[in-house]
Length: 253
Ligand code: 9WO
Image (cartoon, rainbow, N blue to C red):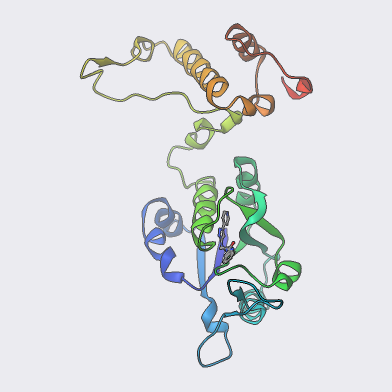
């Protein structure tokens, strides 16, 4: 997968590119990053990327010119299928694991990071295919959300997680919260590990983990349950602990 970033702060991405899973994925050739400094696509001596809003009001707007030139330059005579250009903004559709999965299956993403009060509307209309939000809060720019999106996407790329199964076992796989985890020591300051995990009985362990995931999800995020991938046994257990299927639950298995 190719991931191109268009930003006025390319240096923000560098530590991540050189660290951990991002660096490994790059080294293995699973992901190729391109970082494009928007100021290289300006046309005046001051390398201006922003200007006053027509109609007045607070804040500056990102000029369309540099953004159009940057994206045109990076898509010019490319043999690949066209990229999906994403604008990170609080106005976008909310990022969730389902959308992350969908994006992880594309060959080429362009992430456009706004600053100031946002981009000229014509950028949205002509260059951007999807506008994505990582949550309902305002930051100072789209770079941190772009990093969140990249981080979520690259861990799903085949070959990035050493243990092939770990993405399937993680929280949100099948739409439930993750079960509790323990490591050594067995007794930490008198706090003991649940005996079932030490039993060696893998069927019992699987069942305990599933039940804990169901309990946690019911307690903390019951809104996830109607969309979760649940078996008859899951439903029976949920019923025992006080959950009853909502109307419209035909999607349950
Ligand atoms: C700036 C500003 C200045 C004066 C008055 C009002 C103002 N609103 C903003 C503003 O919303 N700035 C945004 C900063 C413009 C787009 C890039 N920025 C951004 C992206 N902040 N938060 C995000 C973001 C992106 C994805 N998910 C969550 C938040």
